[in-house]
View 1 (tube, rainbow, N blue to C red):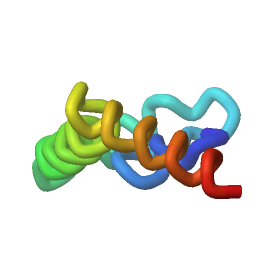
View 2: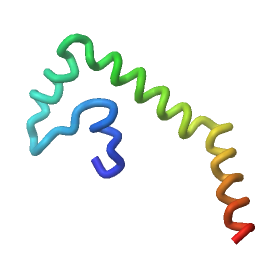
View 3: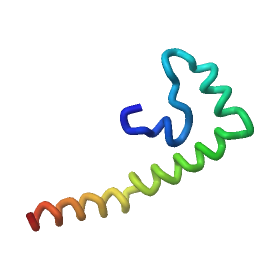
View 4: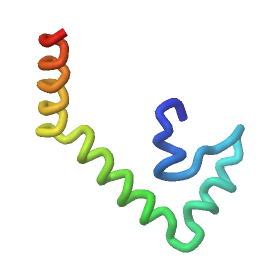
Length: 65
């Protein structure tokens, strides 16, 4: 979980305890809320327009240094 994605939008499994991780996601429909939040995060971060804007901002920052 180097980027924290699993912890933020699901369950970070310790060792091989995938059964407990799955149970935690299925409990009370948590999987749906986690999935919706993950999708929103990915769309905001990696959607084409957002990615281009991030690149342009980084280029601008590098050019002013």
